[in-house]
Length: 210
Image (cartoon, rainbow, N blue to C red; front, top):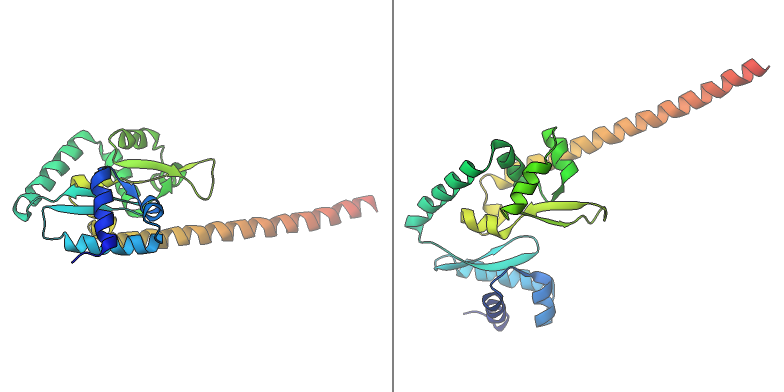
């Protein structure tokens, strides 16, 4: 049996229709955001065998229909077929990068691909497969992440249900850590070189003066 909070959350999601942020639900119900997330997680489990479900990402939740298992596979194949027909391989690649390694900035995406990705990002935004959010590390730029619409199209409740998500996301994190280490090492080497040049450059000038 659902708790009062879960019933209130269901009512809010049903009334909204659109994705509703955890922070907004928290404010309306005067409950901590972590509690809201826990209650929604419990609700998701309760809807596993029903005709509707709740899909979530890092910040929002939304009600969606849940096709019966016997037609869900066919629907996924149809949607995937349509998606790949309309998206170029390059755009599909950008979508995969954001899905498994986002949220991330355009510069980070282009660093991984090695080419400009502005056109692909624009197409994904128009299709509402990704969305743009403020970059918490640099207010002058934005990050991109997967939308709830994208999850809904593929029949997933969360990013964690994507094929091999944990494994591929972990590999992405390891690669980022390796790149950071290489950048730090390069910076340290440049700093050491600068000190070396300054030291021996000054000594050379002193010798010339003497």
